[in-house]
Length: 287
Picture (spheres, rainbow, N blue to C red):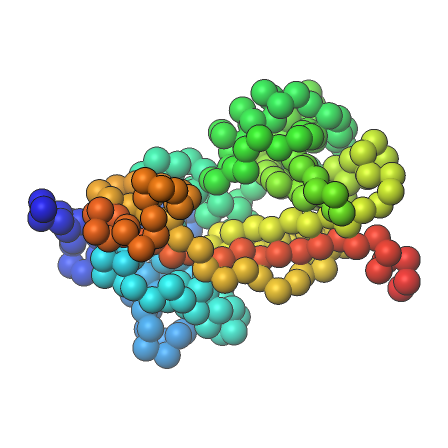
């Protein structure tokens, strides 16, 4: 078996982590940015902490944050929960995301510190769009889009699509599979605007609508503002990596079973689970 190649380290910080720090420093040249903070979580390290924004950033290199070095499925999710309890928003970046989807990650970080253009829903129109147009937008603006949904809607401002929502359904409810805004934009009450059009066209029976978001990056504020109720989050799930450069989604098959992953040179990379929300129209009527 080939030896595992460790990432380059510069004074206790990986070069990639340093580039995240440099990016945040370029956005906040006059603000305090703490590296390797051990005060907020009482001894546990936060790679980057911005006190004025109550924002922390973890950079998770796949070599160090896979089951190769960290085999606790709850390591990342517990750290996220501890940060929340301390009143700090923790964003956890996987190294392959920074390498392959850097503009999208940078946009999430900009928005986390308030750098974006706000557009009011009353200045926009909502319309149904094609599968192809919806998927293209999501691929360019979402970190981990759910593809092959059934219905796609766009929020347009000055003839430009600045957000896309997609939906799929089961027998008993609808699932908002994606809600994604264009890099640089936040649509005020965008989820509400989409739901108004979607419900009128496809959900006249007012079936419940479920939605989730990645806890590593998002808080789901836009769903709460649209009337969703937060329910029990999921536990951690995992992707797999073989070369520590890229993660792959895992689906058990005859060729690759979970019990055989390490034997075949794969390592698990655990996430922070998902926040889950539901919009139940019957409960709204009862209030």
